[in-house]
Image 1 (tube, rainbow, N blue to C red):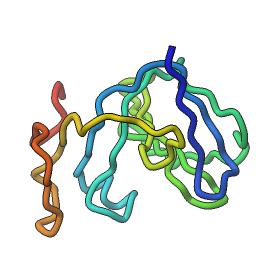
Image 2: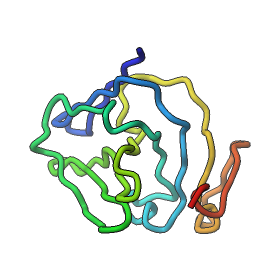
Image 3: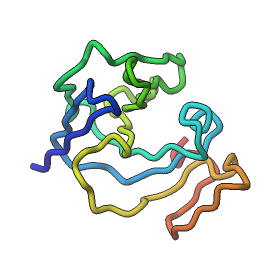
Image 4: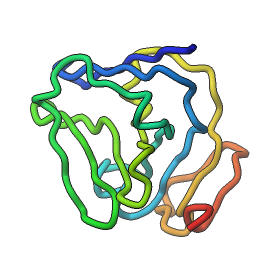
Length: 135
């Protein structure tokens, strides 16, 4: 069984993942742009049961957006840690930039590319979708 560890910018929050990571997904929707302050959010989907906060659970805060995506972050440094959709409570999406374990994966796909800013070029050959596949 593979184990991955991660943390926030201030190292107040630490977590571990005890299973395989899903594909790397870049989300270019306008909500992810606003939340990240960038052109996209990159994350991997995992099972909620494979995730545990090992330090700093009291520092994790949630921006709740009922019926949409709940975004969890460190209330001390502001690092986005993971998100969870109300429609899929058994899965979550961990922000790749918070992983401390090095991973050797390529981008799986891009979603909501119709919302991508003109100044943000996609330079890989991964599949691109105008929305989230399956929605």
